[in-house]
Image (cartoon, rainbow, N blue to C red; front, side):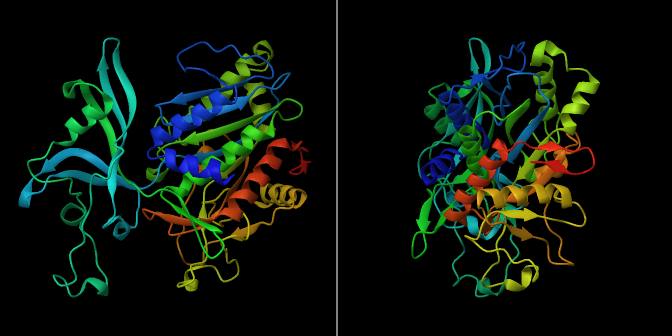
Length: 434
């Protein structure tokens, strides 16, 4: 599990790289790639996947008969970062490409560490415009702190000005500019790079730490850790029973609201599920009745990480629901429904956890403290299914580098694998048959 997780974290330097890595794993497991503009022909028992924008993936296995529902686990590939915005200056003898913030981040964590650039470039070819993941695999840039000698109040609290303080330094004023470095990496002429989506990324590789190596530290743990663990469980679980199709989803742009064609608030998920129905048993269940019946028989895990109790700030947690590293996956509840877990969906996951021998923790926001949301709430707009928000505890969410526990990843994999294999069916009265 650790090797699979760390490989996913190393590969996922941008959403396009995470999706490319996931696609390679699916290819290796015998899944067939389907392109959205093509006509789909789906064979019983086969595995398939499709990719949108190069940064979002949906994979599934066809049942042997008609589709009666879906068993879904969904996560996201993006993390808060600094997006390159196509401007630069060379003031004070330093080349500084311009960046703007993507998502809500802990700005202080980006100072004084090796950085580089990753994302995707649109390249002109003989056949048109090609989208290519690009990663400058070198220590390229730094955002330097101002020395304490120059600001004696630096340790008294600080409000950062991104324009003034968080633009990366990428060399002397007369060095090659970023477009030239991108062209060299891609092996194309600089003029053939027509446009791009590029972000600063941290160069630190995943590492184990703690007295017994029980924790791990890496960039993008939120939410690539959930993406990796749920994908491994999906690949290991095999086909479900009956007509339920197991589905794995990876979206982009969750950190900025998911309101994109490849985000959870789009029709991507519903588009794919409707096409699966249309190809199931000759399309006999593809009408509105068939879709409604399949949705009623479906369940979704919205998999996104959660805040562990901070040892220096226990006052920030709900005193009635502390969450600890290494004590198991977490069910998330919210009275305001910013999380999707309710009594029925929570009961299903608790029962599956009991059967799998997986301890579960509970997260609720401290009363009076505003919490975050997850992609599950946005998915409900197009997929009105029973849904539970789950995740793994971590420290320093939205830091450039985060920390979590390996035991939680192992337990989460076991839980999700059990979930995929379970014979879940609604009883029509708000309960579930297991």
